[in-house]
Image (cartoon, rainbow, N blue to C red; front, side, top):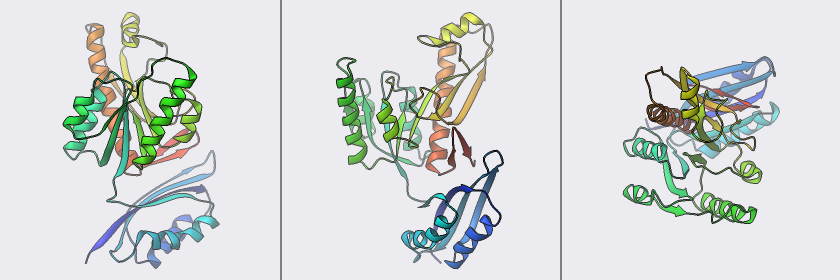
Length: 287
């Protein structure tokens, strides 16, 4: 018998009976739960759950959403319900460092990252040939100067790409421009950034060189949602690499780039598989 898989993701004020009530709605539509994960945040009295279930092929997504809506309203839920096979559409932003871009394109090409990439945007031309080799449209939106007017124009063009391509997620794959507060608000909950982490004392240029001078023993990377507070958005994933005195700054840079690639790819995959739920300034990640 043909069946369709769905993913239900919810967060709501915590109370008794939520799992029973949700399961009852799914059972009434002939749903069979395949996996379920839940978490209760005692500090904020909030409940989080992700359920993957299957129904007969004739049960449509909109029918399920309509059936679930009354319960969602009653329990004050923030929720999404999607078909599991539907891939999210991702826009990649990049500047002059292409290691994360190249890694993501390879993972998609080899089927290891369940996303679609309809477009790539950059403020430089460096990677238009890489985009062409993957048959992905490349948009060059240069910043001719640092004026607010130029910044607003560039961000308007990015927004046009987002809307024309029905983008679900924007990824800053080493995009070295700070998004305006207005752009951050527009992309709230649907933009992921990657940056060097575990180096909080080393701001500005050449953080790995600064770390080398201080003799640090750990380097790493953090993938987080973009907010107007620079590099302080809700964290999705972090990874580290242990180092020692024998490594030169250039080796730290190379190791750091590897860690950035892995960390960003994991964060995107978990977002694409609807495993991440926002919890204020934090996230709940059902791996």
